[in-house]
Length: 226
Length: 126
Image (cartoon, rainbow over all chains, first blue to last red; front, top):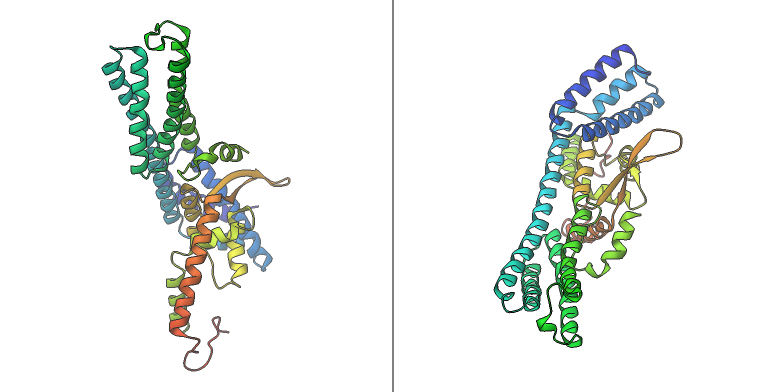
């Protein structure tokens, strides 16, 4: 139980802590307050065990924690860094999606005149090329994840198209309104779905995919959820 | 002389806070206060992480993916923020432990086991 003197001292201490924390969202600020207060209570309890009075113990706890403004500044800086890295991840994923979209649009525009199916095939091939080159070049984990997920999905899509061409008679002259064409076009959505799914994971920091363990993505995602 | 030793220790401690935190969390999830006290207990009060440095360090480790935190209710008390080592954190700790062992072996090889002039000094004068 805080004495009136402790109460004033604590109010002043938390006001000084709050000043540098203003840029944090209210929820984050409340979390910092709660965590700090719990720590102070433990510190005060430890000082009481050593023989201090409750009032002295609380004052010692506030002093031991240190300068609240300096602490608040460091916490604010760390929060800023986390936002910067989150924005970088989002931009990286957006970059991956954008490149895939651009490659798709260019190839469809160039080849769809000859045949819709040829347009799709060339889009997949361009996507493979783009993703293969960029996946090796850019070190950002999120970008690699985005690109490699697209790469594997597009390998699957291209394989499906090749099989369709072999198995379905007259596939190269397929009607764009026909169901098989729609099914093949749907396969093209797989890279975007995969990328969006991984983006949602990365956004909350639940999962940090790496190139090396991409094959273990699903088990790791399940573990991250547990 | 004691102050000079303390200053030298401070210099050595700089930058080691994240690794100390990871090493403590290797044994299981803990909240911030428990992490600070465990570091002091294991080092027999030689090392202490200032409260003002502990939480920013924990945020930094969380941002880098080496640690994750969650608010957990323990018993009948209010929810507390508990920190857990991630797989990436374990890998990072393993790398740093190897580096530390190499470094300390190398330093010991250079300086040897020579005692300072005047005999062994007590780090905590009476």
